[in-house]
Length: 622
Image 1 (cartoon, rainbow, N blue to C red):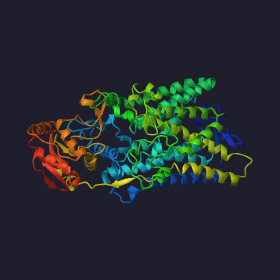
Image 2 (image 1 turned 30 degrees about the horizontal axis):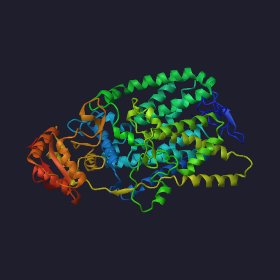
Image 3 (image 1 turned 90 degrees about the vertical axis):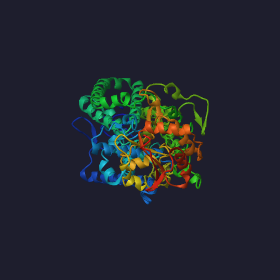
Image 4 (image 1 turned 90 degrees about the horizontal axis):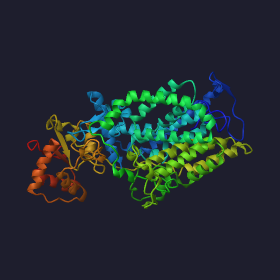
């Protein structure tokens, strides 16, 4: 997709050489051939030092950029959280669960403390075990909140750094071009919009490596080694985010198909090593992933097919030319306005400036077969990200989108359509880097003039699209009844805790409480994906199987009114408490939760205020 050393049309050339001999308007730096015939820069030790200095500056700038994005959280640490933090609460709980699985020797693929006593299939949810398990020491020492923030910073900076490494070592010779590409790869809305909620989608540092190792399969002679290395990356990515891995596979498949149509002779020669390498990669991956995938699709709490609400997440038809809700341009335009309704899932959103620059670079470099293939791949996935029906300027139309052809296919029916737009961002990264490299190498313009012009142009298109610090709100402290462990004296083995308001995306209190205990607090409810009606193998459903008493809770939660409670309701509540195996019913303190507490009192009698919350001891009922 990106690499090669020969002519612009030879995308099957050895993938470890830099593209230095194919730029327009100038000679390439001198190179020497290594033992495998791969062209590499023949820099002296003295010449390499500036490169290492540039690398350090690039990595440092990415780290500072990541810290800038999360700076509102760091300014008053522990007292702030992202606006609408439902997904963050779930991620913190998953990180706490990973630490608990390590320290208690529990099955990391199944979470019995969520949706207790029935549990949750962790493989069917994004438990980020490949991130959570290594973060166990930090989670145990400082809590899952700190682990989450560390992962966001490392994810943003690491994703940018991974693209920078790939570009600077295998695509362009200019560190500046690679640095700009890394900025887009790590801080575009497709990545940065998830900084408030999704460490699994911010952590895209394996994407450029997966692309690189996939292209290495085209090389003859090292099929076993290349296949095993790709398999290792595949396994890691499965335990970060399977959706991203699925998307990488689609992207590489389409890219190679487009390449084969245009360079049949060259691709034909690479088919044998490609097939051998894929066979090794698939075989090695299956050996490691056989049981986790079996557990995901056939284990307890598994489901088949996505939840219908997922299909509503789509990119606007004008999404590529719009600015992200947290971009510099949009924040200046809406200065003082309330936060937008959706702060994540913004894939595309380059803004007019960057979009027009991308189009210009594609047209200018259309002679390069790689540019053609990447541009067509990116455009295809942008169209699929529109979902179906199409949305135009925020209004859903009745016009079916291209995604309608795929939405009912296996795996596609579990994908959020908008996330297909991530592939567009991956295509844009090398297109911009190669274009900037060629602009840098233009002859006939004084170097100083050329440098100032490029800085001005790229600043003008990149700065408006750059992310601003995330928007935050006050984070309520965890009640001492939870943080001190006082709840343990009430909850025995096999018993659960009912937190009202019921833990959901828009009512995250209970999830944060459970996360603060590293998933030790057994929640009867929760925010997760499981099978509809609790029947294994049915389509996905968000949350547990609804019970009649949940409806009364929902009235108090969403309407802030106390529902009428009858004797029949109290008897049903007793039945539901037994269904949940509940020992305690807890509710937060505060005036806004008064209707919730009054509803609980009407059902279970007077509660007791203790340790910063209200408690109803229902052990006798269950």
